[in-house]
Amino acid sequence: MMNGTCLIRDQQRELPQMSYSLVVLNGAQSGNTLRLDEDPGIVTLGRHISNDLQLDDDRASRMHARLTRRGKRWHLEDCGSLNGTHVNSQPVEQTLLEPGDLIRVGDRIVLFVDDESQGHSTDVQTAVFRATTMAGKYPGSNGSGSLVEQSVSESISVVRDSAVLCRLANLLHQHTDAEVLIRSAIDALVDGIDADVVTVWLVAADGRLRSAGSFGEPQEAHLLASLAVEKDKAILIDDPENSDEDSVTDSPASIGMALAVPIPGPQSCRGAIECHRTRKRGPFVRSDLDFSVVVAHQAGLALENLEHRERLELANAELRRRLSSQNRLIGSSSAMKHVLDQIGRVGPAGSTVLILGESGTGKELVARSLHDMSRHSAGPYVTVNCAAFSESLLESELFGHEVGAFTGADRRYVGQFERSHRGTIFLDEVGEMSLACQAKLLRVLEGHPFQRLGGDEEIRVDVRLIAATHRNLPEMIEEKKFREDLYYRLRVIDIEMPLLHDRGDDVIELASIFVDMFSGQMGRGPLRLSDEAMNVLRSYHWPGNVRELKNAVERAVVLGQGEEVQSADFGLPIATQTRPTHGEMITLKEAELRHIQYVLERCNGNKTQACRILGIGRATLYSKLEEKEE
Image 1 (tube, rainbow, N blue to C red):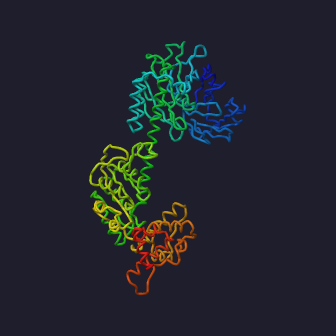
Image 2: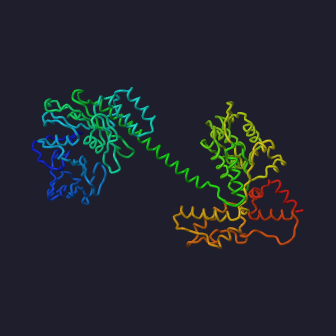
Image 3: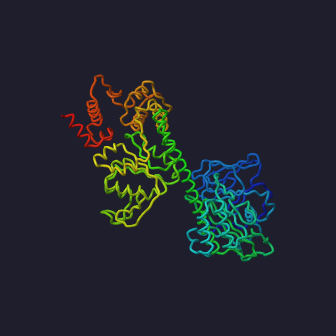
């Protein structure tokens, strides 16, 4: 390549009949041709004069690459060169060559061409262009045409036909099928630059160009497209000024009537578009090249967006599959069978559901199962942990706020009720909600519209509400901490989750599943529970329920050794691995006080945590403790 122009020089010597040949396309040796003879069937390329094809490039090794004939095909092998060998822009150690392949050694580009299908020719450039279905006599150095390369960034400066391009942009972003996208780009080029032949070539997995769509006479070879991809530049063949009209065939492949533009990709070219005209229409001009570059860029972006969308859809499907496997309710005990039966009957009904149970029993899994079985399953599923927000922030989280509603509200916030429109909202720990927020929630459940904090716009939503709590709501109603009318609105249907230690051998089934899950995640081999470990799992009272079991199994898989999980690996308190028993005869009140004291000891004196486990309020706990002191 010289002065930004890639010249394929006219050669005056006659090409002998051969099966394959190599043609140098750039540099001082541009146009040099090497015949590949069947005997001895070995050809070398490199910088040293001893090579069959000497390349004048400092980046080429002394013996850079070797071609070997095997049967009827030629194989290319890199000879341990310093800068590597590339075929169609792809680095290769060895590969099977196909006609039209571009071999790059350093900065030199060599074309591998099949001459048997081209017939006899006295002009090397004619043979080269015929390898790309371009026919006609190509003149010599006097007034000859040339391949003019323009950088892609410089070619976008002119947009010729805004109507065609606007229509193309709309079509490209409407369709989600690659074939339709490519057809839209081809139609735009046919309309915009009056091309008689348009072919879109895309880089396949093996690095070679494959036709993805065409208009007009089918094209089998792709020299211009290969050059455009190799150099990442648009190529325009100038119309020769002194060409002999009688020597040029009236076909779309006439010399001086072609262009090629690369299709950009995320890291490299994803392909190229090659266009041809008949001589009757006249040669392509610079504005045609500019137009083609814009179309190629639009097509490249559309294909990239389509691939990105497909990757997201696959990732989403995989994520849903994993979540589905992790969110299954597992258990064959009678208590769990009753819960699963309730879910099967309540899920499709769409009624408001209140899920009761201690922390870690699987209330959120029940809520998710109800959503998946409801008519809202295609809509959003939104979870809000009411215990994680203060009174003012919880109201904003649920119903949203306008700018300036409170200090720091510098933008509008859409609440979770709006986000869950035509879906399901799950309010976890609903017992922690303030009375003011309860009143607003009650109005929504009664079908009234609500307003964002600081706003006056009335908002209506269609959502299914599922609530859960570990608190004793009737007791909270007595203490004036929970609205009775809201309680009955929430408790249209209630589902009570059983404690893990009341589910029998479900604990073994769950533990086995967790062992398989964590051992797979951590790359450990197959593990199994020892008999001793299973006995401990059955006897332990599990105050943290399934959540505590899952954490204990994870610890055992991480710290355990061998192929069996031992009881010590769980890290459970030795003194409390069995359920507490009482041999003496005591009153119910005394048993209650002892149990409260036991839970407080297990919680290290944390009264908030103890209240959650006991299912009572702090006032009730203090009252019970005062009774003990008396």
